Amino acid sequence: MGTAALAIPLQAGGAQDPFGFLIPMVAIMAIFYLLLIRPQQKKQREHEDMLKAIQKGDRVVTAGGVHGVVIGTADDVLTVDIGVHEKIRVKLDRSRVERVEKPKAEEA
Image (cartoon, rainbow, N blue to C red):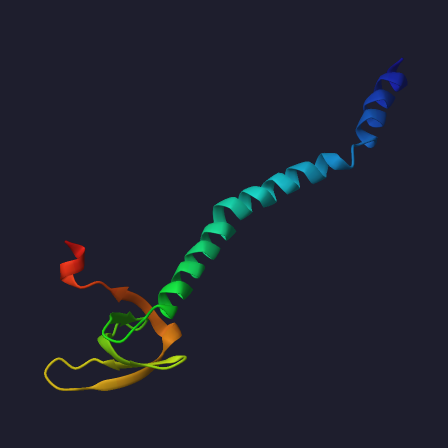
C-alpha cells in the first residue's frame, strides 16, 4: 500500500504536455512585442520622417544640445547657423538632429 501511493504521483508528473511550456512563452513574446518593440519602432519611424522633412529655415536642436537654424540641406548633411550675433555655420549629419522646434507663432 505504501509503494502504490508513491508511484502514482511520479507517473503523473513524468508525462507533461509539450505545448504546456510553449503557450506561456508565446504569450510572453506577444506581450513583449506589444509593450516594448512596437512602440519603439513607431517612435523610430516618426523620428526618421521628421528628419526627412527638415527644410531650410527650420530651427533644430542636435543630439549634443546645439540650437540653430538650417540654412542649407543636402542628402545627409545639413548646414546650420548657430551664431546669435554673427554668422557661425556648422555642417552636421542629418541623423544627429534630435528635434525640430516650432516657431512661437505656430504654437499659439
